[in-house]
Length: 386
Image (cartoon, rainbow, N blue to C red; front, top):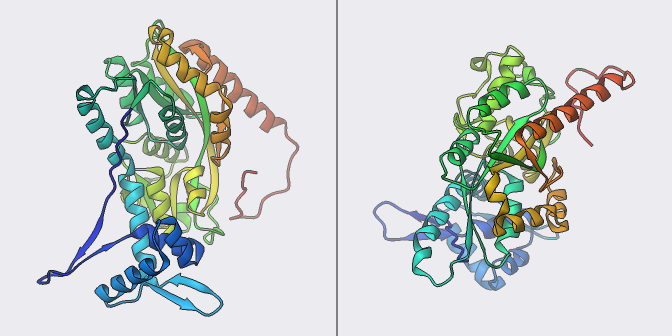
């Protein structure tokens, strides 16, 4: 199967001058993370001397140093170098899924002209870390092609109902908002023909700066502390969930500082907080940990796939289920903070699946109610999940 990668190039121009600079932000990021120019050179498969010359050329172009070296302390980025790196992190987090979609469209268009024609499974799913891990494992399987398109939570079910995909990825919250989420999905689920494939659970909550300097412990604290917030786009399931949580707590979104500032992925909002452009965001724990942020858990979501009953009997789908049930997939999910492989690959009817998860939610609530009373937590203190 042909794989296409589309990567952006950061090319800087000066007005009225033919001079340009192509800055390799990956090199600068390695310097930021390791403090060693030698490591950055090895990671880029370049010589130390070549990387040092590049850094000097970039600094000369901007007229501002990008790195500084201190005796006994290695190499570190200057504030200007940090700004460039964080701009790159935000760009990659924002555009990554869209570039993957474009690459997949191109691969699909040129596939008929190539000799390799593996069985292709069309997957429409909300962007998530676990979906990416599954995609990586499927890409290693000979004879199976994956046409993965990242779409909104609701649109993935629409795609399945209209025959535009074979697998639809959906996530719904546990707890008080569960019935509302199921109601939104019901019009696009066919209990007779659709089958549900268990996948993972994931923790959702607030991403805050390391050490949680504003002592944010709830959605109400976003208003009380006047924290700078960065939101998800209106079409995303995560944005819908966040708005529903605000309504549940009777919080006016207009009172949240920056609620109209939007980004398109979990990683993008996390990068905003990590770069100092916001104090908090809402999303998955894995994104928060990826950028070294603290996380305030608010709820758990079930992420699952839906497909047609007849598709389960196809050879490619049987191989997908085997991969979901395999050790490699469980090990990959175990590396994602806040994610748990939840009976991956287990197939249920729509009714059976909802009964299973509702029973689990009820048991969770019962355990919480039966738990011994704990001393009151000081105001502003964040209870972290262990």
